[in-house]
Length: 185
Picture (cartoon, rainbow, N blue to C red):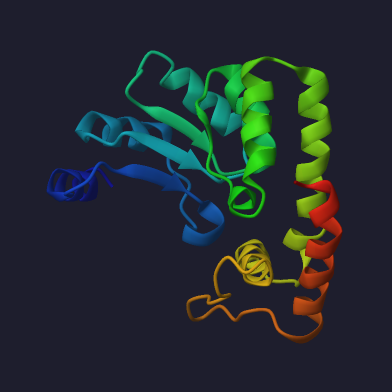
């Protein structure tokens, strides 16, 4: 892995952010690999492993590296990330309801646990509805794309081999968006 990083990072025209998403890549980045990438110029990591212990280990390892950002891709972990010293989240739900995630970030920075609890319940509704339509591991991506299409933000294109939601699945997303319009904004 070190050799790949040494060959890649210096050639990139823009700063590089690592993306740890073992559910898709089947590779869980070791802390040593992340450290190597940071030493070669990576500016941070987005961890979408869903492993809170690993996330905390990243935060601890790089707590003194102010130029290296630790971000979670697991939206529900944003408060823990901030409270432990991480920097934030890159969450797909923010494409649909950015205000909730900005408010959740601000509540986390302010250590407003009552507000965190309130906002986390809204995020959980995304998990219980839009993110749970379908049975494939790509349901998060497809659900977000379908929701954005229903909201008129963009089309619901997904790259092959994924397939966009149609029929009953799309109708479920449409219904969820209607329900959310009153409570999420």
